[in-house]
Amino acid sequence: MPILLKFKWIEEQEVGSSETVKKIGMLAVVVSLAAGCAPLHPSGCHKTTATGNCSSGRWDDQDEWGAQARAIRAAINAKLDARQNWKGKKCRLHIEFAQDGTALNISTSNGNKGYCEAIKSAAHKAKFPAFNNPEVYRDFQKSGFDMRG
Image (cartoon, rainbow, N blue to C red; front, side):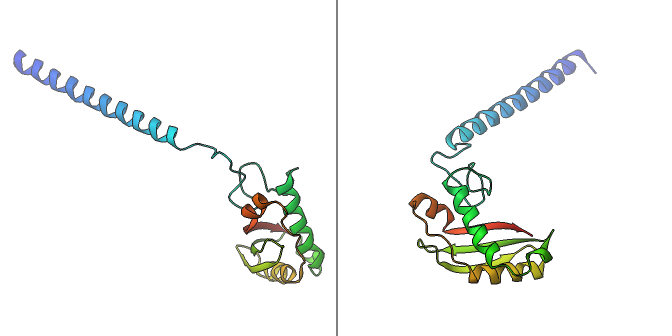
């Protein structure tokens, strides 16, 4: 390969690699800007589901959301027949609430069929606590609970 062609080839390789570096750099800038516009932890967020994230609404949380979740679970467990038969069983319970605690819609998914039926029946019989805090109600209005026997 003549020397002139070698230099031309080397120059093309350097230009190609510098273009790649520029593209990667631009991509990094765009991703950084996009991430900067969307908070990783939304302000004012308490959660997206009754037992979801934002550090609240889990059974063991020591706040108003955790207390509401525990009261709902206790109301269901109080009406659950033969609790001892459901050890180790799981079910996802979905409840839509009115602000006074009335269950407007109850359904189940993703779990042991028998346990899900028993949980749904217990939820229909349960008397749920009213929601005194509008923020707690907003977060629990359409809730999903991971129930375990």
